[in-house]
Image (cartoon, rainbow, N blue to C red):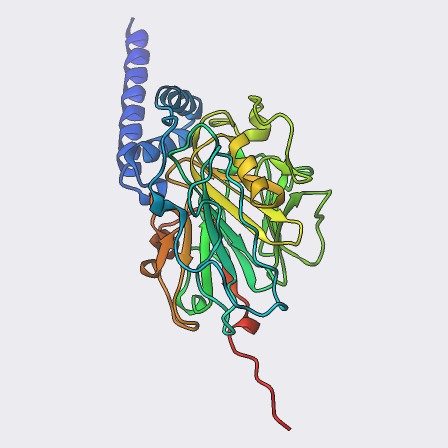
Length: 387
């Protein structure tokens, strides 16, 4: 009897201590900005870290099943961009400006799908980036998705690695973005899933942080700063020219078309959290036939709708990046060349993006992300010497 009481007391004490530990770590997580903007996101991140990912996923799926985006309606007219659309620029030395994007909605709204130059221009006044806005599909017509088009002939990319994603480190490039590197900064934006959910690998600083999976959708940055998207082992392979690789699931666009099976519940291909069927905040990036990069992000998107939007924007290959409101964030910076910028100089691609541009300039931001900056050759006006 005495031994039994000791065992019961020991188990009760262990249960109490574990409960206190969980309560203490949850309290810390709810004040941790790197876990998300909202308390619900912070709680979800905490749950996944403590082996309760299955429960978090179950709750999220039930929540999104009940709280579906509304159908029908029309967005406010000011959500389709503003400013110049016709730009008088030289014909050579850069990619041609993108063509108007056809909306998946039945009737386009004024300005829908029209590209506007945005962000810092080169010293010669050439836009390196454009933005446009369209609706996600023909059903959720009151919502707007943001598109950003980037010219790799004028921009160079950088992958910033985090202590949480991918983990480990320290890394050569991690948040915060240092002031001395911001004189040519044009944009910063989110990367992909937590690595345990990404079904892929990670390469940076001349080392493999996590093994690269053959066939995985991959964002690859070369040593010349050029960035592209493709299937690892087919479109891109490891070489001395590769500087960084960030993999996330499988391609959702290939050959200029959405891939087959996007409406399935294949969690290996489309993510073990929400899969692809829920209409939530999603982001993705693709590459066009001539090498331009296109980012898409916004609300009320299934993975099929995201793929369709990227195809409409010209992507021939594309992958999904991160999802949910706290993680979809694209920041644009506009200031005189050479001027150091910070989060206060940035604007979000869509005003309803809950994460502010300042996150990339803080020491607590522990997730990976991308930046694009004007190439040094584009920061000064070329001059010719008169004979």
